[in-house]
Amino acid sequence: MARVRMRDVAEHAGVSVRTVSNVVSGYPHVSPDTRAKVQRSLDELGYRMDYLARGLRSGRTGFIALAVPYLAEPYFAELAQAVIRAAGRRGITVLVEATAGDSEVERRILDGGLTNVADGVLLSALTVPAADVGARTPDFPLVMLGEHSVGDQFPRVGIDNVAAARTAVGHLVEQGCRRIVALGQNGSENGRQRTEGYRQAMSAARVRRVNWLVVPVEDWTREQGFAAVRELLEGDGPLPDAVFAFNDALAVGALRALDASGVRVPEDVAVAGIDDIQEAAYTHPPLTSIAPDLDVIAERALALLEEQSGTSAGPGEPGAPVAAAAQEATPFRLVVRASSRWRSAGR
Image (cartoon, rainbow, N blue to C red):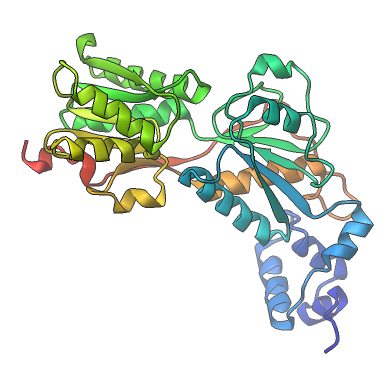
């Protein structure tokens, strides 16, 4: 069977070859009706982009790199899946690297360590300090994912961490909880922001300081969540009303520790987390969590990469550079499940 060409699609759709090229390359300035008509022709004719030829013409590889701290942690695995889906719709292949949160590895990536194999980089940094990066701007397409910032010169996409934590704690307060544990302070920027959100919510509710309790951990893992809550329960202090975990992995560990100690959730202690990983709907009881819109994060991050590389422009039209301080806050929502339905549990 003969290979379907752009010219074939153009004749089928009754448009120019340039219009077909604009639709295939994701050029935004195409009317919805024209885009839909061309897409129908692409689908009916079974057109497939020749990525090798496109790469030879453009000097691009057709690959982007995604660097995350851990692939074993559900949030980062689900984020990677969202990026892969969004990239696939653009005909882009994603190369994934796990940094283990190593600041040296993150710094190497910021210095262009992945650009020999990729046209652009999405980096979810965890530990590299801004002081190590300085004020330099990258000379390759780069977008930071998440809330850890290494400087405003790097475009970044993620939720408002302080607002997300404030929303979760505010929900617990609305349930009648007052002795709320903030579980997860670890010296990271994410930890500082979520602690700040906790403090803002507790202050807004005029909760007495004696009922504030910030519990540190080394890492945001199930094991650390279990150990920290188990130690808290074995102490001499009063039982908390609620645990606000800085991510869902900590929350899952907290649920296991509470269950192992005979503490009922939510009747005795309510629990809420952040990330809304798939596991959250299947814990016992199901976990209340803040859900970032990972698909929006992935789409916006790729759009910023395209703007930097010029791939969102039409043929022969250079892409506009991204403002150095582009910082995009993406949507999140509170997903309320049984772990925090305190009043309805009959307390």
